[in-house]
Length: 197
Image 1 (cartoon, rainbow, N blue to C red):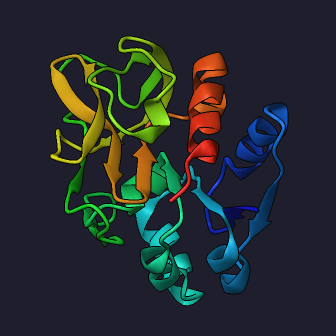
Image 2 (cartoon, one colour):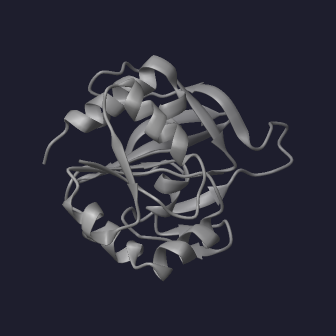
């Protein structure tokens, strides 16, 4: 079973639709028992960090997520919430990765948010087993994770080199949206769902 965590964030329906396109069915849930028993867990999201964390804590989902030992994929806001802290709302996050999520600096000539297609490189980990360096993924974000020891993909936006994916033990995060990244994204989702621990 694939549990897709339901919380105070958007873009969940597009993840469920992407799973259907590649022949899988996700169960949208905030039920702790279902999440714990799932074979794979997906933590999607578009939204604001502090309100999303407040929602997770109000339902005890913050502790549940940290206890999961099955393959776990956080997408966009989901990846950011897996870090230790976010500058968005000065938010204490889950701490799975010891990184701080930062706002892209303003006044430097490039657009914020970073929206559109960009390349991913220096790929590592089970999610990228069927992806080549330099392929394009779809991004929509104003906050980013600087280069990290847990980076499993790197992207450059103007002169900022950031972690576009993270990997630690059973936890994977992508700053980009696999569900919106065409064939490349579908290959990432398939690789993740084939991954067993």
